[in-house]
Image 1 (tube, rainbow, N blue to C red):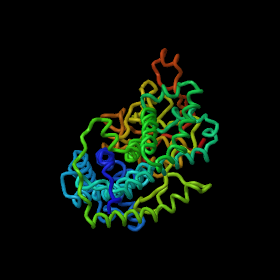
Image 2: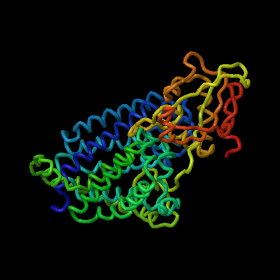
Image 3: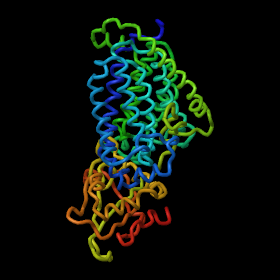
Image 4: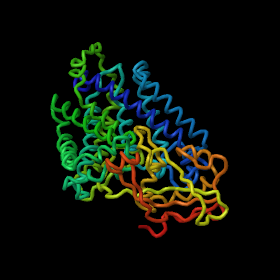
Length: 485
């Protein structure tokens, strides 16, 4: 079948596959470094508790069959090592079947992690990595030209990512329709980056232009992905530029980088190679029949499963970041359908006083990424993902988001649990754990230019109320949030 492959996209596939493997490396490193503390046998939400009440069919995972901290960490490091090998080109140096097996193992390992990850893995970029990784299994390697059907499926995926995000904004918060959401977003987003303060301080007319440009990039440009070249390449390029703008403005894990890679898959690689002065590869042989059969079967599966996300796109009750099947194939995506107008942060403090009297000295625990010390400039972590920091943002929005894990977190801090403390930037009790822990809710806002010059502070914060009263190991847990705001 001559139509089945297209050598024009050899460079696009090369960049996409190497980039995707690099994202896998980051994802597995996050699991290896944070898994024990979050979902380990003695973690905040242990996997054994989860799998005891979750049927395999609803959450298929290797860890449904066996789980231990050592086994989980070993799988994460195996995934990181295999992904690093693929990123270095290993999949292009083995037969086609072996390359497909490498991609399949990466997908199965990460699916196993996500499906027992509970609240810590409930984000859209997890499903996006799995859906993208599944399609990569059928993209071939250097032995064959890229299959056209899979290239179209990648365009369909990036279309849903962008168009779904655009629709959820237009249908959601009215500030998107009024072009005013960026008056607040850079300050209230989950984890600001080093440039977020400067983005927030841009003039309001510039913010309105940003929002209008975002609507064009997410609601009009994705339609051009299905047009002939070079228009599709231009559309992919526009998406790349807008995603790089988002990379610069905040920390969104690997969401933006995956979207960039998907958009690059729509770029005509032959024209790009000529523009860059790269030599073209030698003519590639036709793929084997078994490969064509597998690609056709995978395409049919994706087409059938696309019914649910396609229906969701046209629905007036659009779901955001939702998986319709336990394998996370062909999902629906979206981001920031509503934007917070104010930023509330939960600050955890401890004291070593035997009794927390009004004169007790309370010391603050500092997280790696979430705002804490007002003088500390926000850091860039993405594509690496700080899962606990991200969930602390949700806790500031509503205590209900923290109900399953905040009490266990406090207990671990009172115990001085080393795995948990490694998730933090600063533990104010390096020698012995505190006697009491409390949490307070603050209103954070970015400082003005004059405040930054005179105080050196990036943030200004105001105490709102107690989030959790002082607790001890004799009276652990405390009820996070009290009565709510």
